[in-house]
Length: 519
RNA sequence: GGCAGCGUAGCUCAGUGGUAGAGCAGGGGAAUCAUAAUCCCUUGGUCGGGGGUUCAAAUCCCUCCGCUGCUACCA
Image 1 (cartoon, chains in turn green, brown):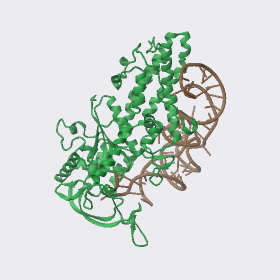
Image 2: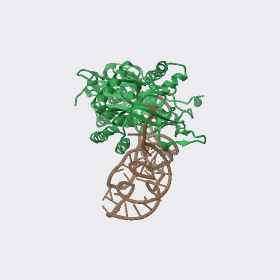
Image 3: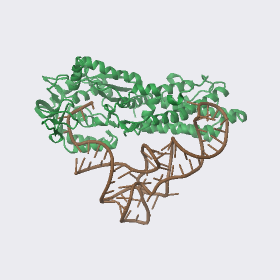
Image 4: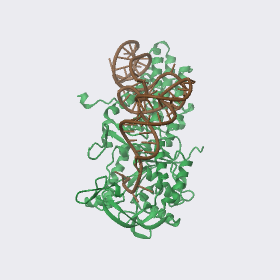
């Protein structure tokens, strides 16, 4: 396979009406881990996130706070940029749907659809809830005593009828089904795929793709009374960012499209797995290679909600537990794709058990012995025993297993695999008892400590995508230069060099003690 | 209502025909290099209930109970 195949991964663009919470942080984190992993594996990566800034809700929120929609969007979009810095996301681009490049791309895509006969003017009517920006079916509504109609969400609806452009989605049903069939891993996890297929099989209706009831959006080319439907606008960001409509040889589009992965929350799967590929195919463009729908977090067993006020701010987590710890927990605690629960107890278990005790203490106990007994330098190994080879072999096998897991977004299994080697290493320390060898067989002690240090190097290189800060400190402690930390250095020929001077070890993963307990 | 999925040790989950598993939690022990961390041993499950197929079922079929998701234009 091409060794330097480019990889393009995207987060959804976040709606500026929201305040960033753990859910946003989670989606982007998963992409970041993937992006970092693939870069370390030697591929060019484009990692995109951004904000979705159009729509009636934004218009209304802006008005309510006495701002122009643009000023409002500027202000709130910044919250998501700040999240990038807080979480140390290695993004390559941050797109905003109000940027000129995006307006141009949307209008170009619209024209392409129009030129292909995929758009027609009709009219849309139905019960509409302004608050929800959504139409509801007659059967979904309840009528109050005074004759008002209320949507399931509690919002009042009104009858509206407006001219609207439609996309011929109904014509794409068979093509989509064939596409799902030919690309069985297009939608992950598999359960979600089945839902989407069932939905498409149940029949597709044409999709209203323009609105006239508000103006904060991208004007429809040639009919400026209409603005584009928010999803057509929003989804297009993925091609905007690779320079669409410039698609020629040498363009970013040519290099990175189709995207390898759109990471999304399970609530917006349909837009990405049905409408988006249909839009693209209808415009003569290639659909993305994969859409992964991940699950939601609950907090201490309860659903996150505004009314409960229990949404977790990423900043609070990072300040309380540390960035690497937070990133590790989110990627390790829950099988990726499932819903999961965030609890203080589980967090502490991961921080103290997995990080402080297993990983951190392994590094500390090994490097302390090296510091004291090997003149503060990488020791010189003698011949390797079977046990030595076994541990080194397990460590060297990690890269392949990690690759395999990440190919299907198995973040938790990747970490599980790495931790099995950390467990092997701790057992090996106990079995070999280098503290006893110090007196009986110093040469053998050197070999044991070398094997351990090299195992830790392998592990630390591989934990970089999840915990960039801590992994980097561990590699510093091992005397590995900053430019020697790619996956291409995991082989034997780049193993630790005996004699390399090492700094005094410092704890990398402190135990977390509850402030109440400490007092 | 329809379609799909799930229900396995206290907790989170793996296991899809061949003598019930992991991590954490609980109990006992060893060691002392290390962030009192580590290592070993161990308690614990009639695999949601019932019926069936099979030499053999957590695993296949039927049925019942419970839970969840999807069932179009809300990020």
